[in-house]
Image (cartoon, rainbow, N blue to C red; front, side):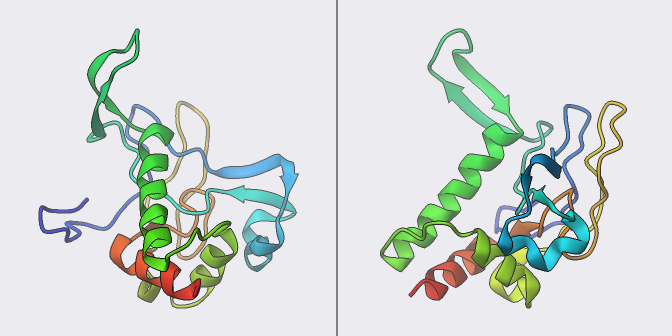
Length: 167
């Protein structure tokens, strides 16, 4: 959670707020892509998700106006409907700063996560789990995990790093 000046008020934690939880885990359809070789101890031979996490809690979610029926009007959204546009906007800012589309950033995410991630705008989330409604889920921990991936981002540092690394 950030204050009005953009400073973190407390460490981030895994989304699990009674309305839902993050959906990270192993894919039983897709095998581990090469950019996840460095986290094979966590994902095994499977594609692990997520790669990165963003705000998704419904409790404190995004206040949006929907102009389509039947959900027309103001309401709170969370989950993928909140986190995906947030991260897409951050990557779009990096595209703009770099002066071109960055394309597939997953290999870069894993390269940044494997080195001094915090210096490059990746904020490790180490508390909480994504269990929900009787489903055990996964525990967050240091480094890559199946609850939050590499964690979340410090937008300013992350945009600067992505843009600079793509030149």
